Length: 313
Image 1 (cartoon, rainbow, N blue to C red):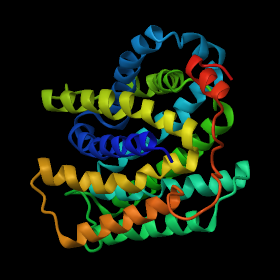
Image 2 (cartoon, rainbow, N blue to C red; image 1 turned 90 degrees about the vertical axis):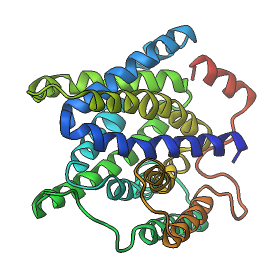
Image 3 (cartoon, helix red, strand yellow; image 1 turned 120 degrees about the vertical axis):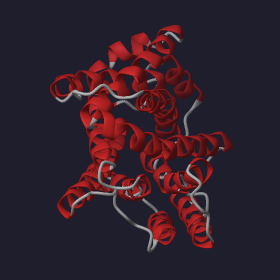
């Protein structure tokens, strides 16, 4: 795995780790459907000028149907489910449940696409989940006022959202591999916008969200969606679906760091130990430890890289 890809992975984890904090601020004011609609509309508006300036519009137009479908599967569905989850779960707990995404991605890739996964990578997935468990052992809690059934539904929603992310990553690999990442990122947010519009209109909040909620929603859209999906789809194109999905192992680590930095939450030895275990599992899942060929993505030739930049197959 190239240094650039590792840096992209870390940047993506940092952005998505912050997304749970922004959702926690904004979700109560907007509700799931309205917040996600605001999120994807602003993200699409941010990405569209970049798409046009970089000449990637023909790539989006040529692959419109699968790219729009990616938006439904990889944005609209999991965004709504995770936003619903944070209404009853803490941001940290929701990010932990989201860390099951690499396992879902690997299993779906194995069953649907026949991906070969080395034993060390399976071990890395298991260690990553163990590290997340260590990180939060004894600290899992629910939002104040959440009833038992609300918390149960929220946990289920977060887990189904992780499965949707896994399915979306493999769908992207199967149907839009080679399409310019900027075209996929922009088109997916347009697809999510179209899919969610009637639900957002139906469930728009009666009370106007306050300024803090709007700021959180805007940061969630631009940084944690627009910029983040540029990194994510580029990672899928360069290292494959399962390795790109391994970013979610790192999200609870960054969510913990953001909590310490902005919410004055304490850092403990337990958290440090969990972080070390997560990093070890992520390294194995990414294939950074052990020998063997890349199994989730083949190295690109110079011609393929050139086509990817132009948005061609």
